[in-house]
Image (cartoon, one colour):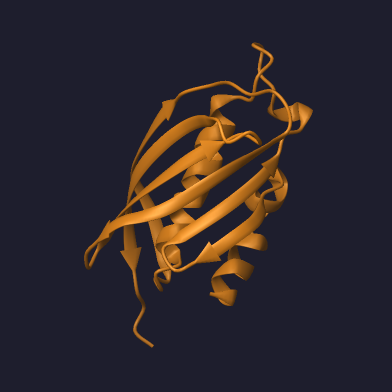
Length: 131
C-alpha cells in the first residue's frame, strides 16, 4: 500500500491540484482538497471539473489499492448535487465489484459539514503485471 500511496503523492496532477491523503485501506480511500481561489468558476463556486477530478482520483486510488499495477478509467458518471465555494472538500472512494479485468467503484464528495456535493461511479480497466 505504501508504494501506491507514494505513487499518487508524487504525481504531478496530485501536487498541482493540492490533494491530500486522509485515509487509505484496501478497496477504499478518503482524499482531502482545500479549496483555493483558482478552483472558483464564474458562478462563485468550485468548478465541476474539480469535482470530477477529485472523484476520478479517489475511484482510481480505490481500485489501485486492491493490488493492481495499473488502473485506467473506462467510464465515469458524475451527479452534481450541491455547490460549495470555500473550506475543504473530501472524496470517499469505495470498490463495489471487481472481476479479472475491471473494477466498479463509487465515490462521494462531501464538504466540511458532511453535506453531499456529488456522487460518482466509474468502471476501471485493471492490470496486474506478472512478477
